[in-house]
Amino acid sequence: MESEKIFIQSVGEKLREIRLSKNLSQENLSLESDVPRNVIGRIERGEVKASIGTLFRICHALKIDIKELF
Image 1 (cartoon, one colour):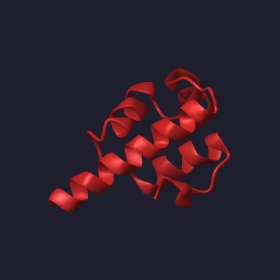
Image 2 (cartoon, rainbow, N blue to C red):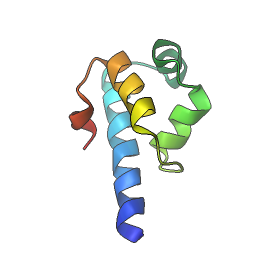
Image 3 (cartoon, rainbow, N blue to C red):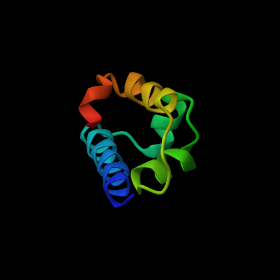
């Protein structure tokens, strides 16, 4: 289970890094992806496991391939 937690945190950190590199706030990403801002924050902090659908919507809004999160 520890490796799963590390993986979830890693995905969140990568998501935050990419979002910031594109100068997007969590609020703007939320509007573009139709994912609630608080969910984006919780994903970035590694507090929740995001579904593949949620990650896909976020990646589509960021104009990146989902594999860039891994």
